[in-house]
Image 1 (cartoon, one colour):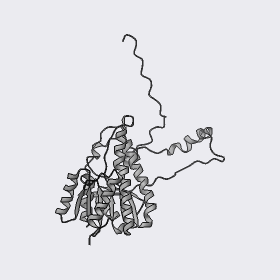
Image 2 (cartoon, one colour):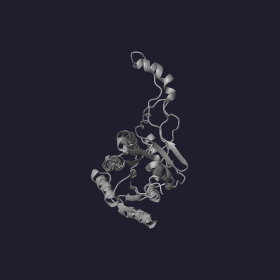
Image 3 (cartoon, helix red, strand yellow):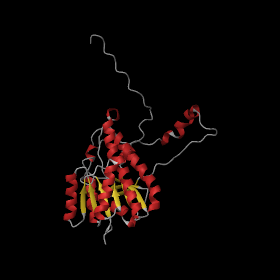
Length: 304
């Protein structure tokens, strides 16, 4: 028997890239799949491919950035397949710009798809799983960009929010038999083509097959993984890596509390060497010599 035989799954952003690979992997493991994508033609192409391989799938074009769209999507799965067991919140877009040039639309568009699309779909899926009494698996999509990545303040912030949402929902939903985990997938897609290095320059990355994220996805979605919740994993390529939770680290303590003078006396020597590297590539902490505004431009001599 296949790992997900008899289960029904929804994948948002399933028409292309990583989402399409997720849909194919879930169907290959025996699940019936609702392929959601704002591009209905691509969603139908993926669903047709699954049906051509002997699986069960249907396309859905709901806008998951709205509560109404998420409600419609979950209702569609339950109507077509009778129940919902797995939801993979994968849909994503990028609007890359440096922070000072980022528009309101750049921020809202990314949050609508990534954070609100994840929040509303997980909420509707969890309500369905609670009402069914069956439990299930909710899987979010995070990114190492939430460590910090040049030109992606909107995207990094949304992914950080999704990570925190994952931890919180794992605590709240366990009572209903619902597991909540995230993956930070490694794959070559249209979105990965926008990646830039710490200096803001384009970086050419090697090719990574999106379908190599599938085995961990299936494991988290299956009953075999029913002891895992509140975790985020780096997947794809040859890796499965736990992303460590944020936590308090080394501290300094002083009877009666701290003064500015005392901090100035002790911080640099005690905590200064432990200041965290910044960003996706985790280069050494870059600001030890201080951060200062650029020197004023030299005045142009009159008549020059």
